[in-house]
Length: 140
Image: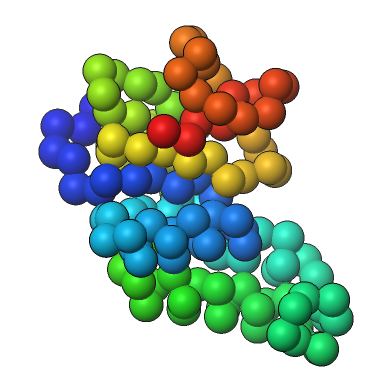
């Protein structure tokens, strides 16, 4: 369990939604860490060509993923390679257990990962969080 809280928000998942959350957290002057078990990009990395994204008539999936990551980093989002296995709320803090042994903790948490969502244990008391009915997606 973490004893030092170096982040104000933890974002689980580095697909477009997670990287956008990291960008806006940084723009709001919050210290954010984005956790992703693989390379940042999510399903963009499995998409060869995107032709229906506003502002881009033709862009490769990996290229758009890199632009998202670069933009989030510009505003201070930190990226870590880590698969989140457990999320728990301890007092006013959210703590994550990660497969790399690094236990980040923060006052706010956003789960922005669709794939592998069933692998994260739900919070026992989800009354204080919002998200899809099938799996609490804490956003506090």
